[in-house]
Amino acid sequence: MLHEQIFEVGRTAWNIAVGPDHGPPLLFFHGVTRRWQSFLPLLPSLMLRHQVFVVDFPGHGASDRLHNNYRVVDYVDAAEALLKLPPFSTMKEFRLYGHSLGSMAVAALAARLSSQVQAVVMEDPPFDTMGSRISETPLLSFFEAMRQFAGSTDSVPAIARQLADVTLVDPKSQAQTRLGAVRDAASLRFTAKCLQQLDPQTLPVIAAGGWLDGFDWRQTLRDLPCPALLLQADPTSGGMLTDQDADEAVGLAADLTRIKYPNTGHLIHWQRTSELLRHVEAFIETT
Picture 1: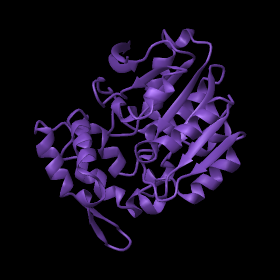
Picture 2: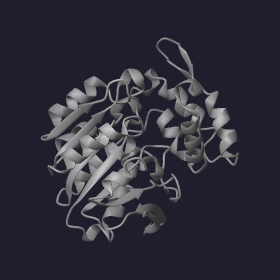
Picture 3: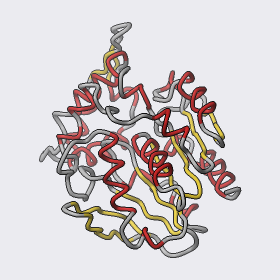
């Protein structure tokens, strides 16, 4: 059984789902606009041998809003403050799993808390795709559109219907894609619920191209002190990690294992759950 707890970090209350003590701690950090429930497909298997802590980032889910900016480095600073408090500060070691924003955060946390972090799993980190390159991708139109729904008081079905009609525009080809054509109705409902709970201030810095300001992902990977598993979605199917960035990541980190998922979008843990679990479990058992 999972139960949600509130952890006070200064002026910010974090909502975290905590599992039973079945082994060493495994902490999960989700992507921007999401919430801890995004990881539900993975938890039944991984809870068998770990005690899981599944985080709602500030500004997301049932956690409080941040009292400053929402750049990647701000999430990392806030998460580091969380992990320096009990019960995390008393843990001799733990493993970290992050998706998207969370994947960049766990790499930075490993570099900062090197004595405690045993291993990290990074699922499709966007790196510069959501930084300096965002204006070159359909993601810009996506996040600009999401701003109208963040914190909405409309019902989940109403938001989901509106999301289906959002148009994504490729700045290079000017090709247009209806969001409802690439995301199923259940996924749109989940996104709608996430957006209801999202602080609208999380999004402007992304659309403005300043999300990665102050965060050097290359130096972060150079500083990784532990084994890392890099899970790469397919950029032609909606993945955010480019082959160029992934190749560079392999060369930067001292111990990095890369797995590619052809024909798979950004949410690998939803689309290829069984295969991803096999890779994650095999990796964790070697660390």
